[in-house]
Length: 480
Ligand code: FAD
Image (cartoon, rainbow, N blue to C red; front, side):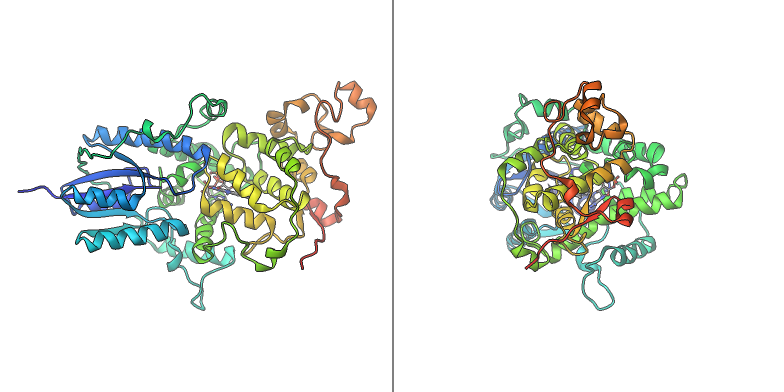
């Protein structure tokens, strides 16, 4: 008998376990041909390229352990898949779905090309907890506000009988004319200094994703409600890059945390809801496909953003003179990641204090984050700048001094990434410019020399007493 083959096209699902497309294909064919195509038209940031290279190496090795081979290509997926189909005896093509407008358009076209050659083409949900088109409110439309959205999704998930089946899969060891090696993809330049720094913080790959989840559950999960706001404490899961590249599925993370008896209900609920924000971002992107570059609230099309290359560069480099902002931006550059609380602070500072366009922030984050993700990044930037659905209002500005004092009370986070401030007293760690000349001398510190003078005068923003306690200020901008 002639063996039957099926192609599994890996994209943001770089794992062998709990992979719905692999599982479904394994029931239909004798052997799976695993392929990865670096789509040269798809947006990818520099730090993501580093992660991708490591992740592909890890996947390649895992498939090799199953006596198969991951076939690597670069170029236009439509042409590459068509050429593989012409030269092989493939009966099925399958993948896990993506939800950004570029991928949807590309995949729809490829599906029609494959099926028109009388080859079956299948796609699956291996990325989200719930797909955008399945979640509708009582009036039959999509949710624009997170809380009711998540209440509805969470109810559906609790009803679902989540079972992970991992059957033995047989991988083919095929050779194709135009295939290349992972090194040929030229994803990284090993000599770059930033790569050496990032490498100290992360180990990409499926098995490390599982370890990261285990570590979260055993060491952090019962302090998550506090940890999600405290950049000075390492209490969040740091699963975001693993989830972005699909080295672990969101459903596995959701289910493992949900059934874990050692996590108390309050912390569990908070964590699962944060995971819900990831889905919510894709829910928004699906319904507002332009939101990567256009504000969801159209009145922001006319917002008088300022162009100021010097301030943007100071923000990029963590030299704004505002300690918590600089610490965040330097953490991002050094480690490829930033705590969510600080992402909000630096985002509010860029768009609401400096009045620079949110797209500047979106682009910098996309290039430098290990977890750079079209959905979560554009939703995060639209939220913080106030132009998104269910967004933080444009007049609500995070006061970086009050936020720092509240969420980094001893200044440990600031000191870790802004060592220039190591020796000044705790009282001034978030506002060093307020030190008297006498104190500056005493602590061998000079504002403007040891550390920059702030590039904006924060005192110009009105702070009312109730908002002072919440670390938020209100200001009035003109929206015409
Ligand atoms: P945890 O707190 O442990 O949360 C668990 C998981 O839930 C995360 O891994 C992530 O997948 C998801 N999650 C948590 N918070 C959010 C959120 N607010 N929005 C969407 N998903 C969330 N997240 C990205 O994955 N990629 C991005 O490009 C990205 N850009 C952002 C830009 C801005 C301006 C802001 C404010 C937030 C952004 N986020 C982004 C969301 C969030 O900051 C990160 O997901 C989170 O900090 C990752 O750390 P963690 O894995 O320890 O999160």
